[in-house]
Image (tube, rainbow, N blue to C red):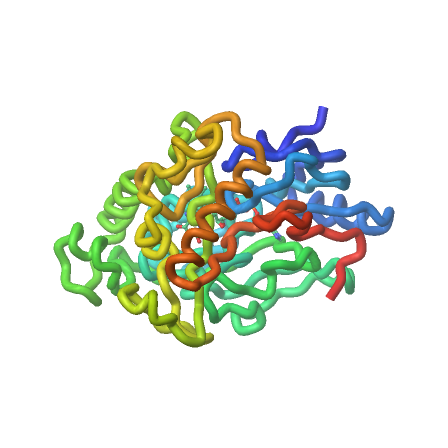
Length: 352
Ligand SMILES: Cc1cc2nc3c(=O)[nH]c(=O)nc-3n(C[C@H](O)[C@H](O)[C@H](O)COP(=O)(O)OP(=O)(O)OC[C@H]3O[C@@H](n4cnc5c(N)ncnc54)[C@H](O)[C@@H]3O)c2cc1C
């Protein structure tokens, strides 16, 4: 029996995959993907399933779950296989006296998922300490090590690995610091809880403790026993705009290389959708997290179609209020917020 995406993802929706391979080493990942490509079979590469929503029809190709989990620490250089659990890596580096990843504690998913959207939290992004990404190019068949400048980071949550199935991340290397002091911290609530000035540092173990506490309070740590966390974290991406519409002038703004970034959570709440909204909407199977208006959550037996309809309802409400159209931060496979069937369709032969 192959698993369903309801079983493979933290949103816990989605139909079955026709074929499934759990690859526990880099060689296995390469072997499975190369064989599928030579057979002309569609391939979906995933790992923790914490940023992925797949249609109720499922996936009629092979799903490769990357589960290679080696971690190698040599001096201040840390290299981890793509399938290694992200938070296990963060905890291990801190235990070894290495600083740099502490503000990124508690983020679900794998090491290989992190360069895909340059994962970040509390004012830090993984590219801050990235040394290289080892990548398999399904088009050329080559494995190569990419320096950070080749990875297309820059604008919020973007990278060369997002919205494409051409590249498979095999491992990631980070350059950390031998220290028990954190990076300088600026995120307001984090520095307040730590009792430090913005821009100051703190003990890395204190940063991890407070970050985990804040994440728990916001429902941002995935808990299989708590349906308030069954989602993809931030469902919508913070919009980056060339010009901020007049209706949104009260919103906080942040600079981005491509314009001005606005917090999607603020827009959602100020469009009238409070945390917990949705219990009286439709069957009540999908709702915003009771702790966090940016998280769309499955209350138990939701379908992908219901998640899409609810997310479209939120998106449309924000557009009506602010004239800003939100888009998903997570990867939608064969599903979309629009009526027309779309979403990413991973291909057998990767296209440019
Ligand atoms: C409760 C919760 C809180 C979250 N908080 C945050 C947060 O604070 N900050 C943040 O940035 N994100 C957050 N996320 C999103 C998610 O945790 C990250 O995006 C994570 O890095 C995804 O990793 P994954 O292994 O689960 O990827 P998956 O969900 O398995 O895959 C996500 C995407 O990456 C691709 N992918 C995965 N592995 C590979 C690989 N080896 N090679 C090529 N492509 C690959 C998949 O094809 C897909 O497009 C949160 C999610 C949840 C559920």
